[in-house]
Image 1 (tube, rainbow, N blue to C red):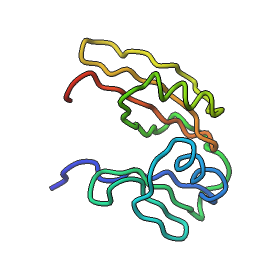
Image 2: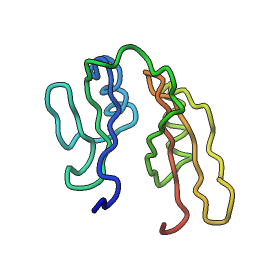
Image 3: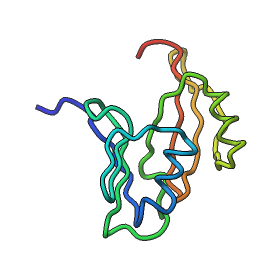
Length: 125
């Protein structure tokens, strides 16, 4: 039986050049597992984001809208400003989605062109 999402991985030609410093040092995610060519952020026993070096990935993302990683934040406006001040390229400023239960979201581009969304939910999902 499929239970749900466990891991999302962003592959890179060499994660140590751009992606690892961006997600660890700029975004502020904490590594839970680090190995040569692979890092998992957060609790290894919970759904997490991973980065890895992959031999079939070369250069920047050519279709960055094909998939998006979503990161939950508790203060989207504060994170947006902090990341903008650090030079992060946002393609969408914080904006509430349609509907009363929709989160506020912002979309940024990582150093290899992958799109990442920040979400702040008003209540329990």
